[in-house]
Amino acid sequence: MNPLNAVALAAESVPERQYTHHEGRGPTPHRSNPVVIHRELTTLDVRPGHEVAEFGTGSGLSGALLAELVGPTGSVTSLDVDDFLVRWANLIHRERGIDNVRCHTADGTAGFAARAPYHRMVAWCTPPLLPRACVDQVVDGGLIVAPLPIAAVPNMTVVAKIRVSGGNPVVEAVFTGGYIEATSSPKTDLDLPGRWVDWEVRVPAPSWISIAWRQEDDPLHTGARTALERLLKDAHTEPYGGADVDWPAWRTFAATLGDHRLTTAGLSPDLWAIGHTTATTAAVIQQDGTILADRSDSPSLAVLRGWLQQWEAVGRPAPESYTPALVCAGGDEGPAGWDLRLSR
Image 1: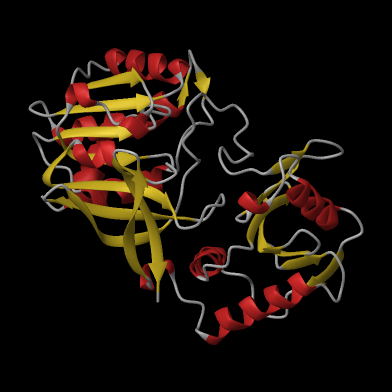
Image 2 (image 1 turned 120 degrees about the vertical axis):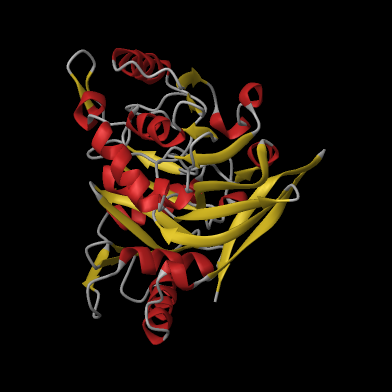
């Protein structure tokens, strides 16, 4: 059956709100948009009889959809670091009489060797890289669909479709998207990134910053602190002169520049920012098109303007138009995994 049709049929059989707004547990914020879930599951191309692992149990909805897709001859292994979510998902599955999905409290970045190998893996949270352990637990020819960082700062991600061939991962396609960062313990503050936050303040309002040049900073995070302060206090502001910022296109382009001064920040609620910082200067553009800098003649502002001009000059390329490559990230005993990098 066509994967799109298979996912649509599965969705008709699964009572979405029983998972997302269960009367006993209440609504859970730890859930992904069902439309996006359907897209990733279509890409995953799950077949009856498959063994599937998912990372990020959440409300349990995605696991229920997978259980429908694999049918009675397949099984689903669902992993989450939050034991509360795991227990409730297991209970709701049992309430519905589903016995081919089992949720476990575990860190999905290590996979789950006890139920391996898997024909398919899908992640609803973003690991710091593609883990070797996960690749090793997928059968030859199997698929992984997962969000992966394209730079060492938060909110710079794409979703990758990865084929395992001869024990090696090969990216077949990338798509716009991303999910909350994978963490080793349950996360309650879903507004703050789970990884690579170099400094945050909580008064008078929450804000944070992430600098790709963190290895150059001192133990007191003076560079990150200073950059954040310059953007929050008496900052120079100006509107972006171009059209509305296409955020997925802009963040992908900024990541592929490969500039180690790349910076992301959250200066106000629900508004991410991307730009350039140093120990003495700072400039970012927010999702609403507002540019902030430490001063009107800031060197970082000049760099940011140059990046935006380059982005416009190449036509604001979509994330799907870049060429993906997996770069081995070494460890003491061989590769710990692979970093995803995009180029044009």
